[in-house]
Image (cartoon, rainbow, N blue to C red):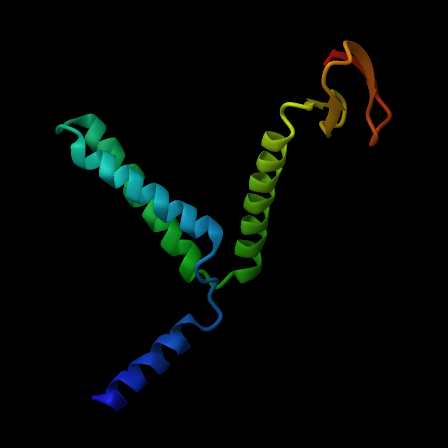
Length: 135
């Protein structure tokens, strides 16, 4: 029995070698699929239940696709974008009382300006475009 379990562990290790594995975006997808599955359980039969089941299985399939993918570089880049968006959202949430965030109309760069200064002219640090906003 021990040899069998050891061989199975080796086969599992060999199967997962070179695959992406369980990252933050796959974790989010699985958590969302569980939430949709719980909501699905309380719905009456009908089109809404069908929609929730499709969303649930779609999110679960996407999570397993990410976990089993052999294109590690692409999945890592996707996960990095996701983590960057989460970190940017957390930073903005912490600074929401003291700063306002505006997008440059030309290059779409996010700019942070202090609140409570009235109407000011904002100069983009990337493209030097000037525009007026209230803070």
